[in-house]
Length: 127
Image (tube, rainbow, N blue to C red; front, side):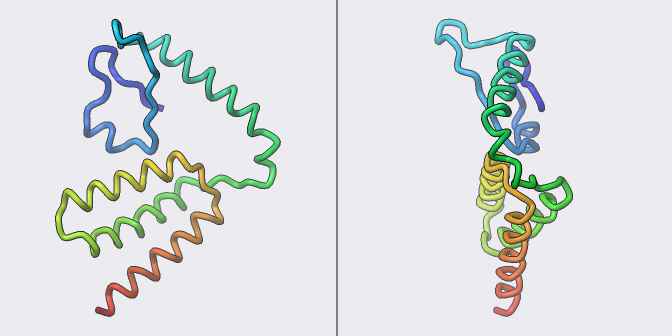
């Protein structure tokens, strides 16, 4: 987990490295929370969600870091072939990373996506 600075949050370069982004709603009059408050709120919410999902997760095997990295590499390869403009490639890659981070996909789902993006990459090479 990465928390932003109290005065201006995270830099764009730091945000680009994150899988998921979370914001904490605050008062319009004073939109800043100190780090201790932010950490406490996030940990509380995560613990609350963990208790809700505990029984549903018994059959779910979360994707590991290496498998996720491979899946993102295949996706990036397809995006590089499909988009001519760098800003379009960067936007679609960032959007996919945020989506995958929010989805909490399983290892099986990741392997399915890897196969799908590998096939797309092969088809694009043929042209």
